[in-house]
Length: 276
Image 1 (cartoon, one colour):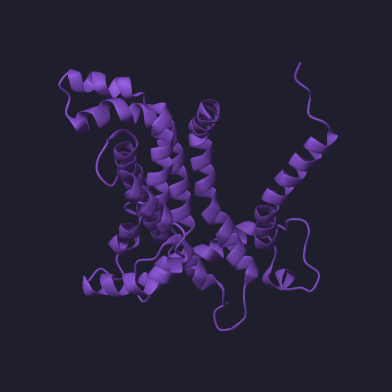
Image 2 (spheres, rainbow, N blue to C red):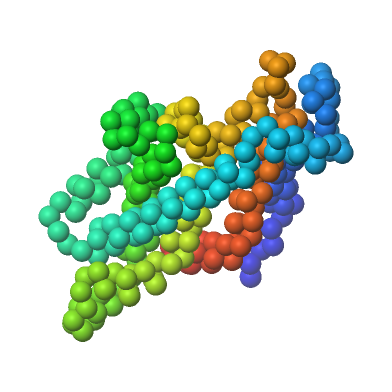
């Protein structure tokens, strides 16, 4: 008979939930007070009544809707690209036998140990040489496929896709890509949903690469646009109320995405846990 969770289990879960939610709550509290109150030595603990006023100031100081559209476009295309190519490569590494399969997979995993900051300058130089610096394509192209995505899909498909299904499809005369599209993709949908959701979130919150490659460009993502809210116009001091209000507004689309894809996300995690 299964034991019911004890007090310590619930206490740890409650502490984890509070610790996870508190940064967003704090951002909302700071974003809902005046600039002077946000800069006071004693920080506020409860929300004020100025959030919508600060939100209007955000719209006045940055092109919020244009930056939001750019972020949606860049994150959506990047997530779709990572999911497709990572699933394709993961299927090949998991189910196809070819020379160099193991060493290539080891090399791909090893690339995850290299800090992404080391590639910023070389990538910026290459995109500048191609004339893509300052464009949306320059933000999207580094996300065409990721090493983690290939590794994640490979590990999932090893157990989720029986070899017998692939052999049956080949006996029926299906091409390798048709086998991938009709057999592997349906089996990988839970993992694809998780990978797509996490990639979308990672690209959405990425700040360093868009800041570097979009420097001086009219194209701005939501994160780089919010960076312009750090300094109050003509005052040279940080307007934390304005910045945190914009941060909360930039978080809302992610919440909507999680609510929309939450069932698929939980199903994918549970299915992976059962297989494990």
